[in-house]
Length: 400
Length: 119
Image (cartoon, rainbow over all chains, first blue to last red; front, side):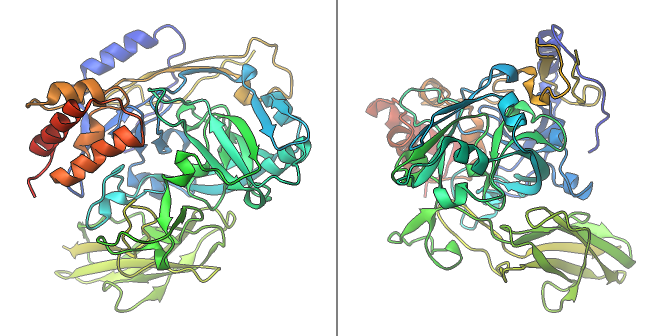
């Protein structure tokens, strides 16, 4: 899973390399599916190690789960990729990039990266998770991007507070939402351009930043180079990539990507019965608490004796209060030890152990609780969008 | 001038697309933002994904591939005709796909027959 790392090809050799590589595509490695139509070829896109290709155009690339056992932060070249629209700029000059700030503001701005660097920098560790992460596990299945659990990652983001930018422009008193647009465009002029909006109170939060670095490096182009919005605790649909426009609205955004797409039922656990039709919806927002084992896979055979079980947990920004581990599918639980705290928006690594007897099978399970009291569900929720799954994960283990 | 290089898995990668990076033309000042560089990549298109043969595959190729690769279809669960009809309707109504009625019907039948199930 850990490929060798060499220095990259710079400049004109690129085209030759591509065609040689495409000729070998038939021999590509496949990660076999854990659900129907779940096979994914492993392909290295630019600035990326081989990742699981959900769709090549627009690029949707999933992080192989073993990566999450390598460390608390997800390397940039392993970080998942998700674009909605096919017309993505493939060449960007960061020096020429500008972020326009307009709408209900006192003064319109056009900010360069140099302008951003002249403002106070902040760094924050935060999980970026796709709203539809784990959609492939919904039962009944629902249409959409069929992710396993790897449409997420944790990074240290560095940039400037969005609040600082908004304050500089000066919000007018009738400002209600702030809308974000990036450089990506639809393939057809009739397709709604991808734009997302946050309420002014959320947008002015201390932790919302316009990030120009990810894990100490410029963002990979496929993760939004040269700048992306970072909304810690919120699903990544709001983390607009290649951020180019900040438009302050004096109304609630009613365009497609807010009014129609990325809506969740306004019900307990945002769950409904598959036959339900009449329920109110709201825009998806804060993440729910989740935890995963990272060093054991479902169906694995293990040796008898004491075995370390370790993993990650995160929530929507209250931080992880506790993680528990069960050897028997949730009948009994014991506390796991939490490792170093990188902040309330970060993955929190944890560690526990189980005693395994030869010839037996075990249903390992883990569950986390947030500082806000948020818990994982014991049975899977369901909603038509396939959003916000946070069921307690189970891992069947056979002991040799 | 700082020449940036990106780590990549050129050795073991089953498929490698490419990135070209050059430093900004401006002289590198001390506080020069790292993201001020000029980055260019080449995307690998649809890789080896293509629609399976069958009646209607031409219409699907013509209209669906304008915006996305066939992997958007082949990675879906096995949907019935009502579900595929809903998907094609969503592409036309919500995403503005300009598919004539006749072709839309043909595409629904194709998706149901080749990627779906009868009930």
